[in-house]
Length: 354
Image 1: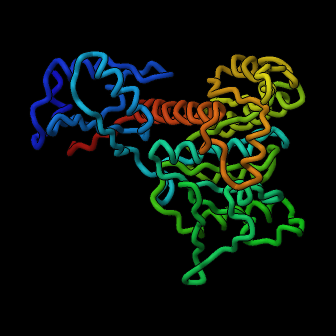
Image 2: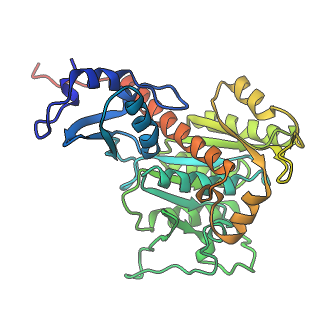
């Protein structure tokens, strides 16, 4: 029954251990480990677990659960994706959008991308906010310029485990980009197509606010895997987030989930919380459109401070970092289930000699 777990080069894995692994559930999501398992090998009391998804942070939880269950093995977790590429050497393209500026979309995109890298994924980030490219600053790359060894293709920058491309590397940061929509859209496509992206599990695209030319260009000319919508709980932001959801549905882009940013204010001194921008607005919007809530983030000074310093807050030992990491894991699983459903629904074409 469990022969598909085994490798001919490894020691025999006890049947009781295989059954236990079959039943063990991932933290937070409760999904069975068996759904994302590639192989299990046993080598000198080291249990080598190969996953289909980059979820290396489950190592500690799996190790503790094994010990509690009476299995005296140390755990090593690896990752090998079996997903197909959708664009160049990129397996998933995820748009992070809001429909409105000022809701923390770019900060969220940076921290999600960095969190994905912490899970073991190969991650790229495209700063598609042509008119206000802020991500170079958030990744500590402000003032950097594009390099091109052959004067044709551009190399992305690399920081904190993330490959980054941004119009901010090409324009004077003190000058406004006074471009009409079609011109901005063409510049963005050129930036995407003429960058030598390495092999990536995820390309996160930080979209500009609104539902205009750039958004439609990205939606129609790229094989987008899914979109993530960022909002705050207040009515003004929710109205625009609703438009973003509607736009993605019109162009048949699945929505992987919604993130409610600035969900509450968390006092750094006393720990008290206050719903400055309203209560559960993003949650209610997600329920209305039947999309999952990937997470709720606080309004916290450290998030802004770390962004200004060029070191994403997800890299720090702070409670909010764990929220970002949980969001990233929820996103990984959501994209996996969505891709699995799409592949299962595709018709099988059989060619015969008749």
